[in-house]
Amino acid sequence: MITCQLSGGLGNQLFQIFTTLAYSIENNISVMFEYTNETTKYLTLDGEKMRDTYWNTFFVHIINLTTYSLSKNSTIDISSFFPYKEPCFEYTPLPIEIASRNMKLVGYFQSHKYFCKKQQYIFKLLKLTQMQTMVKNIYDEFPFSLETAVSLHFRIGDYQFYEEHPVLPLEYYKKALRRINEKNILYFCQEEDDSLVEMQINVLKEEFPDFLFVKAPNTITDWEQMLLMSCCKHNIIANSTFSWWGAYLNQLETKVVCCPKKWFGTDKIMDIPESWIKI
Image 1 (cartoon, rainbow, N blue to C red):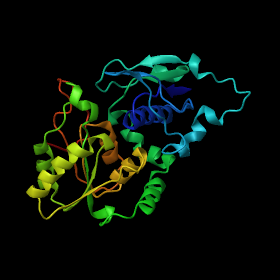
Image 2 (image 1 turned 60 degrees about the horizontal axis):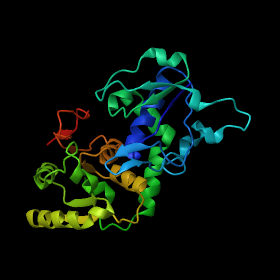
Image 3 (image 1 turned 120 degrees about the vertical axis):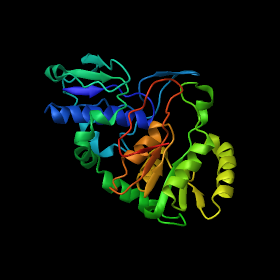
């Protein structure tokens, strides 16, 4: 049996869950996630933090693969599973030996190569199409259809204080908008960044006077915002696992995804699908 240790926000959790599911499918072994309301602690500049999990929302259709579904008499003890720690940030194939014992994946596993061969199978497990239809029906107040829109994501927040995670320059967004050249723009950002992003949007409005820029309301939950991104025609992402997944979950074969060529402030390289345009 295999499980994983969830840590970080929604984007990080998706990498961990997809990697675990793909390994279980490929090796024909059982999977069991620990049902908790919060992730394990992880270190930030402000100290240790925990993040919410999404078992009752985004991942509700695989809640049967969590300890929530176990009977009180179950003998499964995930805390006793042997930890397999990710050896490095770069994609490293998971050893087949993991399948021979109860194992817990510990790490970020930030590469689509861990699960791309089982992507469609996992989409079906999550009932992704059904979830996308649901959010489109709930949030239909935009002045354009999502099928004609480009999602645009700003990630600022704590990136202002991390040398490893630089804030993307406005020039990146200008180049991406010129490359895609679609006029309906649905942009996303954290509420705390509203004023900073508004200044950047005002510059973009002057640069692209024929474009319509509409902000996704802060009242929409983070997981619903990610699904809305995935429903757009094209995607312009930030150096963030959140919008990486907003683009990856976009099931349109004709989608165009623009992403930053330099993801980190160090020499570390983010694994990006080959079809995405690096700017």
